[in-house]
Image (spheres, rainbow over the protein chains, first blue to last red):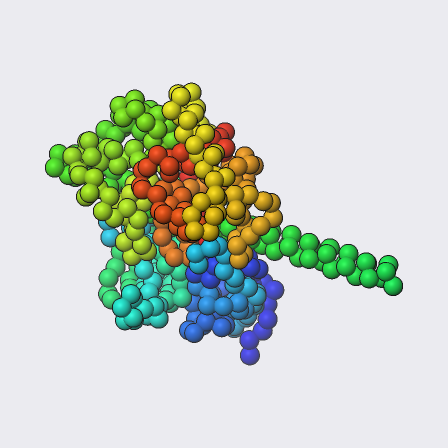
Length: 99
Length: 103
Length: 265
């Protein structure tokens, strides 16, 4: 089973002015974090990216993701042989006159 | 210039902040062109980050990453002048790479 | 009855205001995070290559182009535009001046150089790449368009007049949308651009990468597109009208340190 973890920190705006580029910053404070996977639950293809961290890497990444609609951004981290998860809701709106 | 790429790597203590900009369409395969024809899937699938020649981060990337991707990473135990090399491979088999010294 | 009715209204109004303030700060967070993770520097990189590339019948690069500070001087040049140029006896902004250099230094025809001024996500235009590069060379410089020459002053006056001039099918002026505090179109604020505090942060971040369609947009495009949205005839690239509007906006924003090409929704 996958435990919720507060050691996974997701920094993203609560409201994105456009879904084409949603900046998401993820840090894992779990010891021995080996990988981080980022998913946008309501996207047609939810898995956005997965990063494996080897020796010398910090389990941190910032990405720009496409979001089709308001959704939870979910992170799965593998640390010490187990999986942990956290999520953050991001609302997507449209700004401006042209679209 | 096709597929421009740029790295900015700056030292903060013994951590290096690495930001990489990549020119790439990251087509999802769901968009249609002016004539109504679907634009084919065309996206970066793999990103590799190396510090002084050693692979430290491997990314598997999907078409849900934004066009002209920008990634930020952090590496530890780095010194000024250390070499960061980042490369990508897309679903068409095209590749690109660039490197920078940590400032 | 009256008291409780009023307090409900007050609570609702306060909630709405608090909600708006919270929403506004999240938009600011979005804009900040997007700007910090923007591909805009790639456009500057490609623009540098184009600036230095020999082109046209004269097989010359743009490196001798005089943007007002001397031939080939780029540091701080964009921040001093628009300005009067004696060699053509008129006011020019960056794009208008670069077009002039394309024609005079490179020997290119007006037709060829203006064939594709505004690009798209798959293929930005040469002018867009060049604008990114040259504007980037003014990062940190205080915006100081020309104001001493009579033609510069006339351009400012024309721009100011145009801002409030109602015209076109819908009888719109710029002020119809950008004339009152607190307005927005969908989720984007409409800044009151004749006020320095509104103009400064905006003019200091154009030209800009637009994330909603992955394109790079310039001031000539922005002004042209506003006129189009207002259902007026689209102004000609490099025309007196567009330069005057650019002059008016930049003078209103003067003093603000230029931040480099921006990133917008």
